[in-house]
Image 1 (cartoon, rainbow, N blue to C red):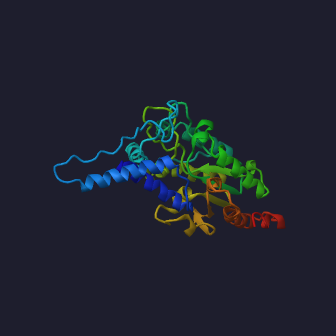
Image 2 (cartoon, rainbow, N blue to C red):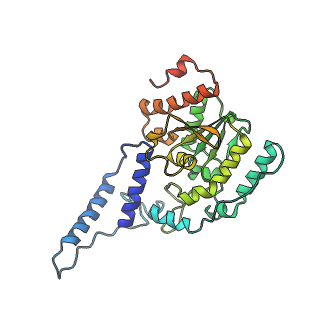
Image 3 (cartoon, helix red, strand yellow):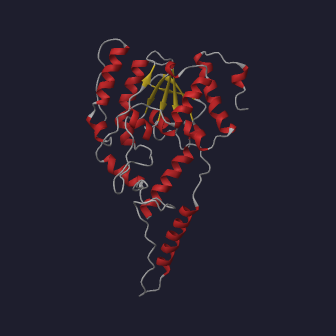
Length: 310
């Protein structure tokens, strides 16, 4: 139970770094936590010679507040899963792009990443390594965090609900998705061992070792595309590009220009930040950052665009 609580605390810290100030929690989950805390308190104050009160067992393979035996199994603690994955991560790859035009270099890089034995070793059966996609002559490159359930099926970044929202955000800038380039810090979905097997039902942030292994592949994509501007979407992407110790909360660095490998970098929230609580205030925060990107990229900005979500 202590390990699970530590993993929960780590996830809450990650959400806080993304700017999330509240989360919805089912009453059944709260009741389970209260029972666990009460049981540990009883065990600590139990008189000598008496058997400590045992906490009510919680089935690791059944989601709380559900009696459906066919429901997908719950993940084991995220922190433990991350540590187990780090044991299998070697040093980052060292390679050189081949001679040739952008398309030749990109195709060679894509083939290398999709065939990378480390990437493939961390992908579940039937799922895919995820590589960037978009316009190789794009002036704007968007960098996301790690693939999710939809992305590891499609093998492309941002194809799920957050990706659909990102497409609308790009359209709001007066561009089509095909006019920008979209990549990820990670090329595989960070795994969480599943009790009893089955599909992974949650996500966890990648570890430093995981990001470190994949970062050369992202940098190579930047070298190929040579965008004028980079946009980091979310705290994981920002940490990968700015450094793990560069900030504690995303609010410290978002909305300001930074630099990665000589390319101007704007940091903003991940589209999922809006999906969790789609208020105009949150939408405007991201939109303010995108307006700065549009201005620096020399894109036309109408009065209607300047007034979005106000």
